[in-house]
Length: 107
Length: 121
Image 1 (spheres, rainbow over the protein chains, first blue to last red):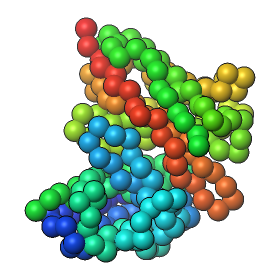
Image 2 (image 1 turned 120 degrees about the horizontal axis):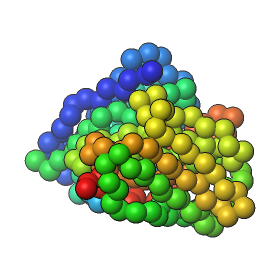
Image 3 (image 1 turned 180 degrees about the vertical axis):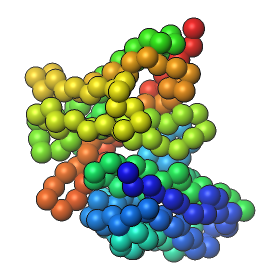
Image 4 (image 1 turned 60 degrees about the vertical axis):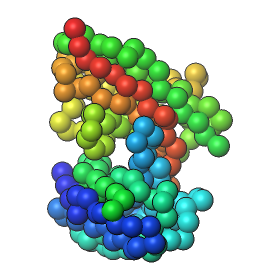
């Protein structure tokens, strides 16, 4: 079973700052099956990126993804007030699992 | 665009059975896509429960495999989750989602709003 570990647990930032969220897999993951989601309180998760780096429909270009193998990252170039949320990475092959999440909070 | 809606009892007794249905609208369940259940305990992260294809092939989280079953009803365009022998640890918001599946990618693109299920006597 592949375990996804996200870091840091919490990022305290101000609007306009950049953010880099990490997702590390316990073994190599096919990047085509690595996705990122954003979740706000009381809402269902929202797909941000799939295939590690491809933006889903309607996702602003300040969101970008990178990585392969066991190391993946989600970057937000300049935080908008609506970006403060929890972010999860997820792989969807073999034994699918989610990372434990990174909370991006207002500093 | 595709819409999903979970439904089922909000309260289940310990040792009982949790049963939820996810109705798919504005799309067909009989496609190459798969259909998934995900849950989130209060204040916790997301946990993948399992998934099913349109023709009934299933995959489950190994930690739940002995208690979980997912089925699909193509004629009525819904799929279901059954979880047996529930305890307080199964208290969570349960989400259903579509697993977009192609030769190149898999991802959860459409989600239901979620339904809270509490296990309590």
